Length: 119
Ligand code: 5GP
Image (cartoon, rainbow, N blue to C red):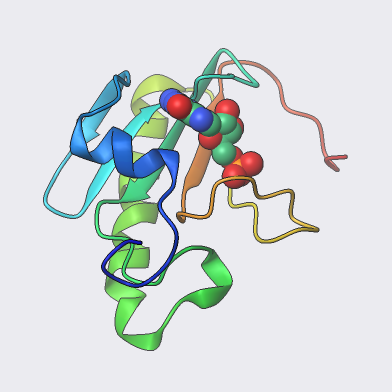
């Protein structure tokens, strides 16, 4: 179990460096790396380094607002660099949200024209 009592996920291995990942950004609070199964020409994930209960967005606590804002800020900073014509930021939450890894992550996708609404 992680320090917050939640089960380990594959992202723990990416953060610790045990597993290789194509990292594009790292700072004190977060890590961004390319998705292993990209759904667009550009597709990367932004995750908090310290999950601290944030297995999913709907577990967010008020004292984590600054961290959540930081993740969003980094997502747009990298998004506009890699996708000058625009991009999409997505968070899948829980079963109906089609979440598969229970460590909060922002998907940033671009490099092609997106469709709306999503499936
Ligand atoms: P979710 O469905 O939870 O929103 O998204 C999880 C994402 O993590 C998926 O898009 C999946 O392709 C990605 N993913 C799963 N395992 C790995 C991995 O080992 N390395 C990388 N880079 N991405 C992964």
